[in-house]
Length: 576
Ligand SMILES: [Zn+2]
Image (cartoon, rainbow, N blue to C red; front, side, top):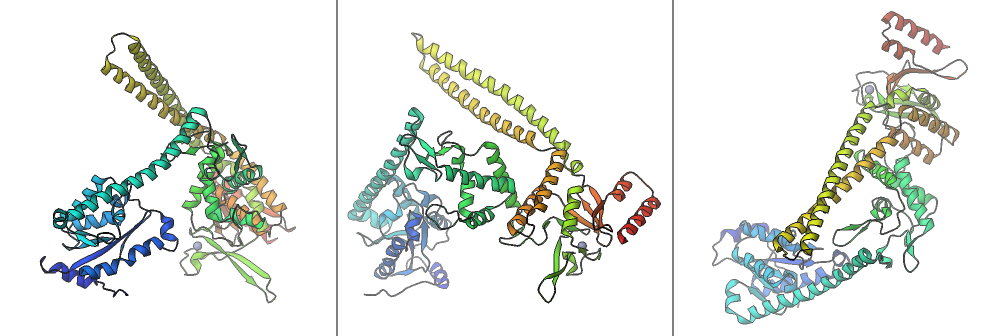
């Protein structure tokens, strides 16, 4: 027998809502639930089985089936998450708010779909449903629409419901308890005997074991460390790191190639720090061997956050034609893009940096293009006085503030530790005395516990502050950055400048500096770099000249005439 599809349109639902209760045809809502998201993905077997029984049930009981089922995937009825968060919770709320027509029936395949919680909880759920004038339809075993009247009148229904609820809940409770027992035992083994659980599924891919403790898989550890360095030091994202590894033919376990998700999962995995998170949410430090130090971890997380803020800066696989892409701007404030023209042979004949505002004629500067001379740009970049730009006295202020916080925290921790010691001492004394006052003992015990946990919290704050201070101290000074820029540009110029990966690395590094290059006057080739302002040109011999005198003269208060004179002199030199 095939089921005739009876479904209600929203108009019908409206019509039903408007008729009186007694002669109202009843609506049926199918409620489907699978607790394991995998169960929902893998061919939907669980869901299909539940759904199949719905239409015949509606037909047998004269119900109008609503076309869309309520589905809770990955919600457990045992913990009651389906009631609190999922579609079932929303349905009951909607019913309580009067949005579901009275007399409607919520249909489940079998009772376990409705609730696996304790009997009293599922009883409560049923009462909430009845209170809104709705009923529960149960297909398996009962094949009944259960209203409050049916429940009260029909002893058999009551018995089945009760038995089912208790049985179903006991099964689930046992399963959940078994799993949590195992983990509690493993957690205890660690806390009391420093014995880690070495099971293969419970350790990260870079570790193996020698039967009693974890051992590092050297090659994989090095690879993970490299991922962190590429992210923190080269400012690369998951896509770029994956590309590099795949280009080198490095393959992950059980897969052909690295993808960005897998890389990011590793970069966010606190197990590299040695931390173990238990199913109850608590963590144990030093459980695994630590393979990434705190500074590198912090730098990496910061780089990821920053990348996240600048999402869409440039896409994957893009050739960096303008080496300074993302950091070159027009005097009007818009970004510059590289315009290239090719000759008939397909070779690049010219390239210009052009304001993006020119396409729509919205650039008020109308200054024309700047002929892109990459080598000149690199040499000028190297020659700028970056030390001035990167010296930030504000950092020292912040460092002093952090040091003050640290001193205060250390004082606080000492006080809290003393409190804990005192309370423990009092408790010990009390226990030893013959006239033990129970109330006092529990007061001392709880204050000792509180003081200890306060001290531990302060200690964590102290560690975080210390790490932050250390980070501030290693922040380079202006002179360091100046030196670093010189070295990095020189290294790039010595490499194959057309290599795509090299160009991208350079561009990433350049953007991480946070420097902007603004073309103030393209015809005169006057560029603003951070705080310095220079005219870039090539002299008669083709050497690149970066002339900063105009900017300096303006800063030193020279007169307009004197500056104009100097400008004319530069123009003469440029003309050769
Ligand atoms: Zn512009």
